[in-house]
Image 1 (cartoon, rainbow, N blue to C red):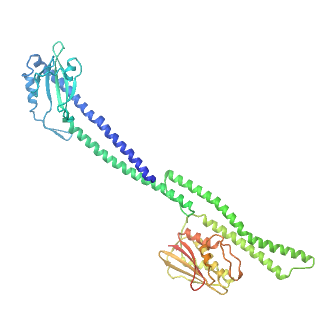
Image 2 (cartoon, helix red, strand yellow; image 1 turned 120 degrees about the vertical axis):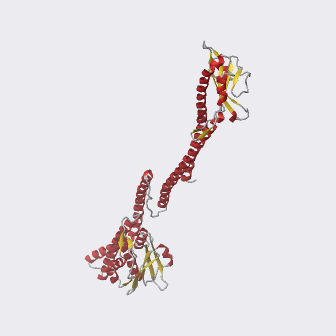
Length: 484
């Protein structure tokens, strides 16, 4: 399971738990709170009515006195009130009065006069000087039919409790209030849940994107690919910089180890030739002192060998430094607008002396109108120089090299074709490897094997590619493709 999905599921569980707790709080607190508010109102109402009913009760007219008449007409009273958006049209109170023995002597509903209520909590507790209240279902099988009863004592002139007045109100009268509150809570809860989930989804996507970029970067570095550090923020940016620093140090260590190994291997051949020629010259000089000098031709040949092998070593070191500088670059920091025709002319001019020594001529085929190219002019020029010099090494005496420029598929293509023997099939897949080289025609010495590797690295830095193929008409053609 991807980390982004795990983060989202964890966040979803937290939000779902919060929503569940919200509903539990509503059930545990809001509903009882509304009923407690109604009970508080009934307490006040019961005590007010008890004071009003005391005179008729003590006079024995509680069932037919003025109080009884007012209470009975209360049920028919028209109420037109709007309470928090809810219409109220009538009153839902029931009032009954019991004597000191708990027998009902007045009932506004007119149904329970004469019944014994002495065992109901509202009457039983109030007659004993305690707070009396109860909630009883009118239908034992219906929880919504519960009715709240709150009682208040009736006192005589000496302050003794002589009766009880109870006010009853069905709990269903507050059901619309609870339902409305529940609907509001549910509506806003659903909205908040949706917003929270959306925020969680965005946060999970963002975290997954940050981690995914770093993961792809780590995989690319592991595979040895040229890649750039992804754009990250905060702690992810610090982690990315730490990975970049670690990569640079590890690659630098491995790079030095690899280059020291390969360079020492490649330097053995020219150093052995230099040492052999120097020993022969030194020996000939000793023999010359004794009267047997080395022939002039041999001395010139050995001296020439020393010079050529020294030049090969110097060239190898120069190209190795140039290649190292390119291989360590992960991207082009500063691109510039390059005029392609000027780039080709400069590269041809730089190779003029080398071509003249090899008795090879260079022909260029550059269109008159070319778009501007974005990149590093120095690196591209050196890449073209390497391709031209490589073609010159394999061209026959008096041969021709053709450099063609073409624009195709949003890219510039540089083709350098020679008239040499071509490249053996077994060597084609390896020509761009570091230190890999082929023997030159007419017995020429091998090159450093770094020129084509340099070209491939420059192409990769420009998001392009370098190829080398044999031509059907003979010779080889090297190509450098750079996106516009």
